[in-house]
Image (cartoon, rainbow, N blue to C red):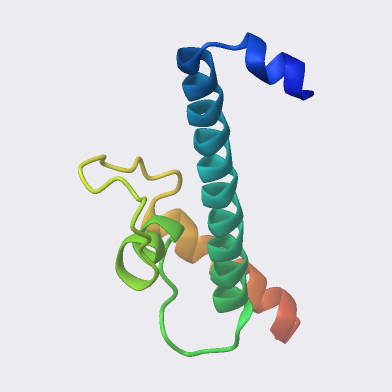
Length: 99
């Protein structure tokens, strides 16, 4: 933006531009942190362990909560525990091979 364009804007327009810019940067930061949490969750899922693995929503809520997570919002389960266990068993059989 040139200096002449800057002088043409009113203070309210500049305030809106700054507000939009900071909201955009905040959203971008949240997306980046959410991607990081998802990568950590998948690393957790694929690490060998005898412990029962948790769903992503439980992982998000109990193990790696962020300050920007909505506390009052009830997350909808995408997959129930039985289906999750069945998928885990399927992959364990693939890794271990036929018996």
